[in-house]
Every structure is written in C-alpha cells, then in structure tokens.
Length: 321
Ligand SMILES: [Ca+2]
Ligand SMILES: [Ca+2]
Ligand SMILES: [Ca+2]
Image: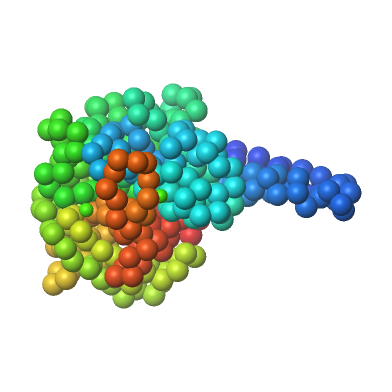
C-alpha cells in the first residue's frame, strides 16, 4: 500500500530538499560541512508524519500519554533528543525512538483542539500519515468521528490504545473502551465495526500476551526488532469480527485465547488506510514524565517487546514498512 504515499507532494519536496542538501554539502568547505549539514539532512529524511493526540484528556489522572511537554512541536523542548528523558512525557521513549531515526516528523494535537480532516489547518489530519490516539478520555464529537474515519478511508494510519473498563480518569462518564466502541458504532462513514473488531468491556488485572507466529508480518517483524509478546497490567482485549471486515488480524493474544476472542493487539485496514489497536496503555508507559504522575516502565519491561511492537506498528501504519 505504499502507493498511497507516492501521489503526495511531500515526496517531491523531500527529494528536492535532499538534492539541495547534497549540493550544499558538495559546495561547503570541508572544515564546516559536518556541523551544519546534520539538521538539513534530518529535515530531508523526515517523510513519515505522525500526529499524537492530546485533545482528549490523555494526561488526566496518572496518565501522561504525551511524547513531550512541548506541544505541538517536541523539537522545541530538544531538537536533537538522545534519550527518552530528552523529552518529558510517559510516551517520550516512543517519540524519541522515532525522532532518532531521522525518518519521522512528530507533532502533538494540543488540549482543547478539535480533530479535523480537510480544513487546511496545520494540525489537520490531512497533513499526517499516522494519527496516534493513546487512551482517549473524552468522547469524540460527531464531526471528529467523521474526520477520523475519512482520514483512514483515504489512506491514513490510525493507532488506537484502549485501557481497561472503568478507567474514566477525568470523571466525565467516558473511558477509552466506551469511547472507541462509540467511534466504531456511531460514525457517519461506517458504523458497523468498520475495522472488524470491538473493544471488550473488561478489566484484566495482569497477563503477558504472546505474539502469533507469522514470520512475514511487518508489525511482528519490522525494522525495530522482533515482537514476541507484550504486557497487560489492568487492560482489556478485543473481539474480532471478520464478517464485518475480513482484513482484521489478531497479532497478540491473552493467555488461553486465540482466533476471534481475547486478542490484545490487532491490525486491520479500511479503505486505503491501516489501523492498529492495543489493549492497554501500560506497555507504552516509559516510566518517566511530568511530575505528579505515578508511572511504571512498561516500555522496557522484559516480559514484553513493547518498544518493537509500538515502533514497528507506527512504521507500518505510516507506510514505512
Ligand atoms: Ca473520561
Ligand atoms: Ca493499564
Ligand atoms: Ca518519559
């Protein structure tokens, strides 16, 4: 499906920038070429655009699901991050790992924003390849549901993370399982399980879900490493509904489950876009973030290969694999 990116002007722009960088490099004196060339090269290579959502109370309670406290642009906090602590947020390990490849451009949709598609705004979904919604805690509006679904239908990548039942961190009556199921059943584009799964309304205390065996799967075997398992620490699972969308595929399962029940990480396609969903926010938690939050390092937990799973999935959603 990489064809969906070939028609976008960014490819030509990136090629032009690369050519410009090459020409600059050729003409620059050897004594000064190394230092100034680095940021130019990074810009030229940044072709996968990922937007992380923070418009749905993703930092409520003990959640701190942001890649950086600098919003919308994490580079304002540190333009050349070296470790997850270069950026502040419990998802900073995720963001920094992508940034360090030089192949990603990352932004965060600020609190108070409206998710849009096709408005021409700088943070409109049409300007991104992938949209990550890490445990939403506010229900999407009708217009936002249309925007998300149309974005995916037209080739966008959507990465959803659900937490467990009764995880309403901002006490507005809506938690992430309920919010995601609402998206899947009441939207103007396709309200009948468009991606072929639904979120189970469960609170599973602990498990270490394992990956299926599929040597050719780009999420389980991607450029960020092999995925063998993940961790579940108060989370949920998914029920697959291939009759609604045969593209749905369970990649990791809760212990004792397989087939259409108990899936912990699921991928699918819709229109020309791609979708991934994870059944817990804990695996992406890198254990450090803004003060006042109780965080745990799931990202590096040896009981899972959570970094590889998050990063490979982001790459696949973005058309990078
Ligand atoms: Ca809520
Ligand atoms: Ca959890
Ligand atoms: Ca962090």
